[in-house]
Image (cartoon, rainbow, N blue to C red):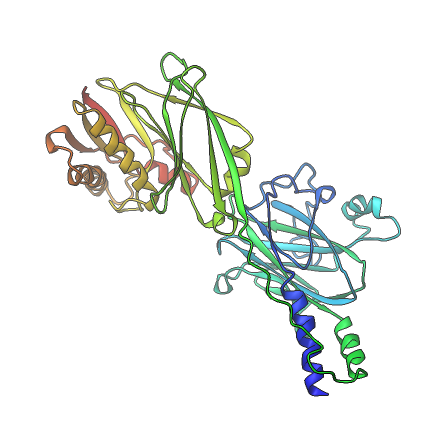
Length: 446
């Protein structure tokens, strides 16, 4: 009897595990209840980027900060909906791609009497959440949250320090649920949503097996399905023009993996229209951890370089960018926005190295070009002398890189401008501080 029980359980477990798939979603336009993404609890759901904003309707706001049921207000939300395929116990886990993201959630059971009015009833609070967790993110567990199997969890958890998980639910077949996931912080890196589904039919199936006579080789364990690698694909479009005349020009367009320096795709803009189209194909599960650089290059011109984050791809693929590149001329100053440095250091951020390479290429393709590299700092908090030496050291870092790659030392000068020419005099964000820590290129002779 024990042998047959083990076989039955094995069949049930295998049939569930082999059916799971990874599904990837652009959640940009699913910030409202009426636009909830319909997902399967048998799949692992991936949001390739954090939601941006609260959707078209601010469904929750001005709630008590001590409420056990409701978030104070929506920040950056996505709605999911799903249905139970059988009577079951259900838990789930929301796993941020970055531990700095702080996800809260509310889970609602749809009213079967009037499902068409469900979203309005939810806003009117005539339908209340059955599970809520608004606790502060716990970085020691990678900022995860969700519902957990067990008996020690509460149905609702208030804001601030508290339990990271709420209690699992027991639901009936066909019941539909709506899940609001809210990231407190903007510019998040996305998340995964994984369900733990324990159907009550497991017991029934075992009971039926116990009444069957044991027959050898009656059960065939299904062969695992081949792993299907899902590819995310985005097409970036734009127009390249001369900065002064605004006329279309032919230029080389490259898409580079900023972490590896590997060129992913390359194309050339049309000489008549200036238009280009370049396609990014990346294994979907790897996409959230990547970063990219789009560079525009043409002989006799200074290059354009743009950082691209995975969570920007859905929006960027919908628009046509305009890239204006300037001709190299004596006295011109070119700001390089993505050669940046760690705070109080002359050590460049990893994202800077692809730009080092295109600057090197510019110097090699234009052998008469002589430049001055000018370093800048984000304020003078450690004193004017320290800031001057730091800005000079940052310029020297770029200079030495070019020299080690074969550029003659007499073609390059370096200069530290301290905090005298900050882009943001009173920076409010990490990005503004980072952009202050930069270098600029001044053409001395061409």
